[in-house]
Image 1 (cartoon, rainbow, N blue to C red):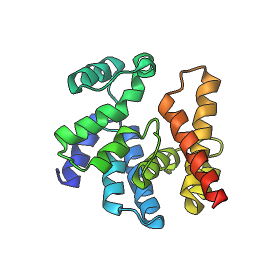
Image 2 (cartoon, helix red, strand yellow):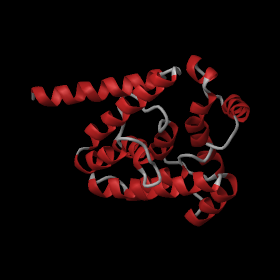
Image 3 (spheres, helix red, strand yellow):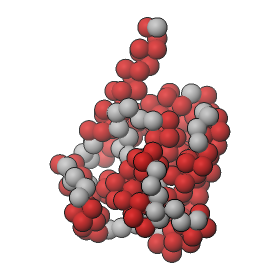
Image 4 (spheres, rainbow, N blue to C red):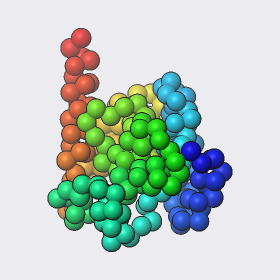
Length: 194
């Protein structure tokens, strides 16, 4: 893997200043969540920093990279190529930054949609992307407070917020987001029955 300072230099040259600052915010937030929930601070830091490395690519570029990397473009991502920045970003992280850890790469890959059976790192990156200090939307403070108390609850709240937002915009909802939300609800209900 490249040194963190080298990765930062590359990201700073490729991302807008706002996106680069967001990436630093996600990195710091992910590190804090990893400390709270006994996750790997190193993995959280790397995944948080790199998660949006493909975010500033155009729709055409994302589709071209997806084809080149053999990434499945499903019915939703065909019409909303921006969702591909997670999967394309994971491949760029692997090929250009020499990140080989599958857990880190999966957290990058699914940070846009979530997925069923999310790992601790998947949830940390998904949530850190949502609540990092530069984010400003109605309800973000509640999410930040929940993230400090209960990771599953906060992740579920973030999915609910995302789904409501996407529906309000009349856009397509990715199936991974529905699967992820349902999985968290089922896990919560299983815990209640024990």
